[in-house]
Amino acid sequence: MKYARLTKEQFDELHAEFASFLATQAIDKAEWDSIKINKPEVAEQELDVFSDLIWEGVLSRAEFLEHFSKNHIFLFQCFETEVQSIVLKSLFPETDFLTKEGLQWLSDNMFTENIEMKVGKKVFTEDRNASIFELIQQGAFLSDGQLFTQINTIIES
Image (tube, rainbow, N blue to C red; front, side, top):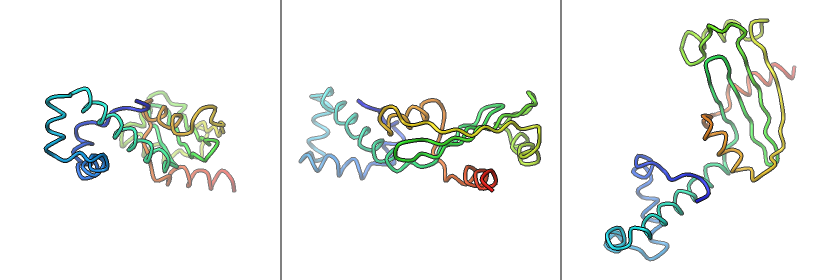
């Protein structure tokens, strides 16, 4: 398995896609039920293969990621061969970007001496999708890129 198995909730959401996936292997519902009972290791393999296919598709389309922690916000834009980052750090330890108040404080202090901002770029040294998946495993989530784009536009002007 290259990534991680989807959760039960994710499988529930992708029920129709999973049924289509099984159908491409000529496995109907009755046969799937039989496999789950009589060959659980095969069922596990099918779940893993399907999970990897879904992750591969999601990661291939991923462009923006965000990761919030108490005093830092990491914003990423992923390209084919590299990832660009903007890191925002509060210089006030009591700031908590995980709260509504902390985000309001960020909005009020964005381009002041209270926020340290670093911009970076890193070439993918391994598989692009594996690198993005690693960021997700560390707590990043896919985003629409609005925050990255807003800040980047101001930085570049």
